[in-house]
Structure formats: structure tokens, C-alpha cells
Length: 273
Picture 1 (spheres, rainbow, N blue to C red):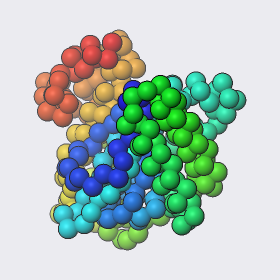
Picture 2: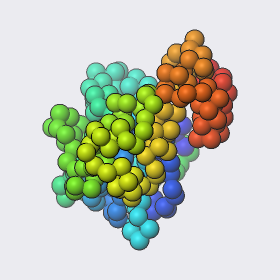
Picture 3: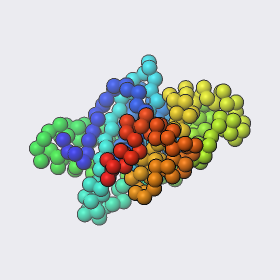
């Protein structure tokens, strides 16, 4: 298996994945079923043939539905590895969709779907083999996939994703409000006053659309930001970081961080170093 590129092909297992982030860039292709995909402050109500390109570090999770399939293919790749190859070919711009926005979602036409699905099948086929030629084939087909997707998604770079219903629109507004204020002390009443919608209605609606409560989302958003700052700001103390992220007590921050990651902030920083 190529360590710089991994693929989960045509998966239909339904695991309750929490909000998470990762340093790899990701290509997500939705084959069929039902899913609301939350990335940062965006909610995507997926249709078969949708593609999502994301930089990975933005908090994301799928919201699944018990009675529906969730068939998807995901490709994760090391950005520096692909960047180096593309730079040698004078084509670094193919990574623009991953660098310009936290995520882009677009829908493929039937002919485009056939091309993409054929490439995904080839990448999966060669990734299951251990010889160097097969590794090379994986690289070639991933580059081919990036070249195919780039002109298709370029027109979407400056478009706002569509929200399918009033329900998702309300939750979208809650997430956007949280994105602006998650480093502050937050109360449901603030969100109620800002959006002019009952806090009880919003709380139930948020759980229904995303699968988690508003305040669990806030915790996960803060911890994700903490992970980024622990990697980038080597001199910031855990206490200082806790206050920056809206926690009243550093001990509470450390407890929440360990609950969500399995390690303390100090252990996480040491592992990154």
C-alpha cells in the first residue's frame, strides 16, 4: 500500500464517525444512499454522483440515516507528496480546489461519473498490490483524477453551496454563528436572539440534522482548533490556549480534549513534535 495515498473503495459500512480532522487532502465520491455531510460551516445534502474535495483540517463528519445506504469512495493523500510531483510537472494549480476553500461540493453528469468511477476502480485495484509498478500506477491515476476534476470544480470555487430545505438552512445559520463565536462564552439564548428562532426548536433541529447537540459541536470545534494551534504555536501554553478557546477553566479544557482525542493537550503536542 502506498503510504502517501490511501483509498476506501465503495464502502457501505455505517459507523457513527464524530467530527474529526486530518492533515491529508481528501477526495470524497458519493455512489448512493443518503447522507448529510457537514464540513466546517457548510451542510451538504448529498446526491449520487456528488464529489467533495476538502483540505482535511476543517472539522467534518457525515450524518447517516438508519434506513438508507451510505456508499462512498474516499481517497486521502499527503499534500506535500502530490505537491512535489505536480511542481515537477509545472502543474501545482491542480491543488487549488483544496487550498482555496475548506471544501467544494459539485455534482457530476452521467458521462463524468463513468470516467471518475473508472479511475476510482483502477486506483483501488493497484492500491491492493505491493509492487513498485502498482504504486506508480496509483500515483498516475490519482494525478489523472485531479486533472479530470479540476476544470469541473473550477466554476464552483466562488459559488455558495445550495441548501436544500429550510431545516438545513436553520442549522447552517447556527453553524455559521458558532464559527464566528466559538472562542467566546456561548449560551443558547445568544443563538436564539441572533437567529430569532426558539432555542428549543434549534436544539432539536440541530441534533436531527447533524447527529450531535449544539454544545457537543462547540466542544469539538474548539478541540479541533486547539489541535491546529498546538501544532503551529509551539510556545503557547495549555492554560493560555484554554482561555483563548472560550473555556473558563484550563482543567475543563484538558478534560474535554482528552475525552475527544484520547490524550491530554501536552501529550498531543509531544506526539506532533
